Length: 203
Ligand code: GAR
Image 1 (cartoon, rainbow, N blue to C red):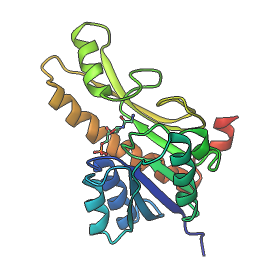
Image 2: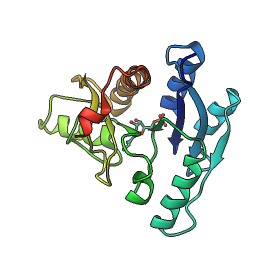
Image 3: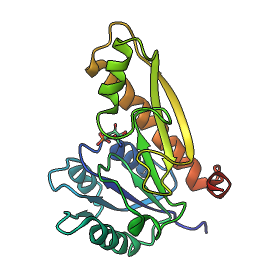
């Protein structure tokens, strides 16, 4: 029997990308189990999404300094023995105290192309840059998280997203989210079946 692939998903908010993963694992599009969903915010709606699939949820507030928080978070996540840790709208920059426990296993989704608009409000900043004539398109990336670089690391997948002349931030955000749901699911599917050689990427 094939080994069960174990996923942990970290979220901070709405969890629409988590929802895409939950659906894909539920239907078998991704051959993996989401063993737990962890959030640093108790109000994150993604926690409710996970509960609907009877997946354990954990709220892990930061009450200590960053190093201790990340160490404790890493110890907690390690108890699940995850094959992959998916950051799906996780808005806390993980330090090496966490990352050193999971080499080549932490995957982040970011709503911008590599090297562009790291950090928060990437979609809004891309929209402004378009209005100012600085860019003609934006995009999505999924990448490994080897270190504390913000939204940076070996790229697993990218998808460009056009910005249209009559776009509002809301219409662009809608197109971005649709695109990232598909790209995240397809990338995690490939990771799970071994279609992406992460060791080669991270060398
Ligand atoms: C997504 O757009 C994701 O790419 C972004 O947060 C959003 C979460 O949406 N992540 C980052 O900006 C990471 N720097 P969701 O909670 O609906 O999945």
